[in-house]
Image (tube, rainbow, N blue to C red; front, side, top):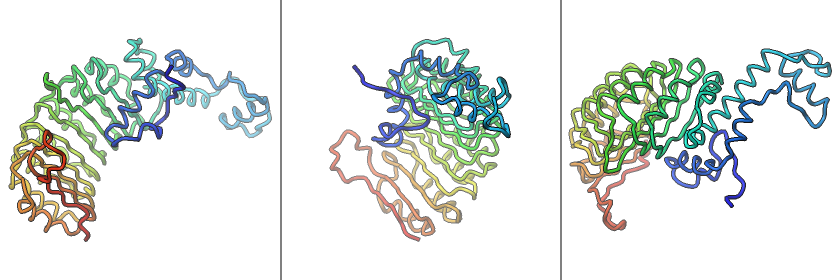
Length: 355
């Protein structure tokens, strides 16, 4: 007996007991036993035929929805406002039950129809560990509410079958009005990732011009400097406020990351780069110090360069000295000691440098 289970619009407290990167995964696990029959029923709720424990309440609610002046009159039996609200409600339940439907091999046509017509402005879906991420992406890209969607968070971490074709499909479906995009395609298993420079370059070229927040987790993907330079070409034209890029354990080197750093927009106030186990060196540090040093809007900088040629505090001195205007700076460097005793102090951490 698993006890009571509910689905939530957003994260419940129980989903936020670990680090933020696990919120989606823990939410998905918690909601996995929610009955599909209830989700199907919820997607077909019609407010105009629903009942209330007090009849007067029903009349007042429907009259308020329809904009009637007399809240106590008999409400209209049909109204465009009912249809709009029914659509939004069905869309929210379609989004909430999407992952459960995928795992249950449900026909996704009705879910896609409800989601596309939902007028949702924010959508967060977790496919972590899904058997066929490519098929999931195909279903999703045909269902995005493109006219209204502003915030999109997709977690395909450790998904099989996520490929360059998957990112191309997503690229063609990104809403023009999107303001924030978070995409997790981390892949660490021995089979490796099917995402290469080609896929990320196509995605980069398609990023909407109004994007203000971009988060890309691409650890373990088959990326090189080509992906970074493609991303650099696009973000120089964006007014990003926040950028988080994780390319840990890829073939990225100074060439690509320096190009990215030089393209950082002046509007940026939060920069987070995870470059662990890549080919970056002191050249990257000096480039970042020079660019970030003149970005007066930059308030927070987080950098991880563990397992690179940047291995000690002296190498990072130029970075610390050039960022006195930042309110918060955190740098992790040192050897890749993930298999060593956790008490090893080979990592250098610099944080909370006051202006």
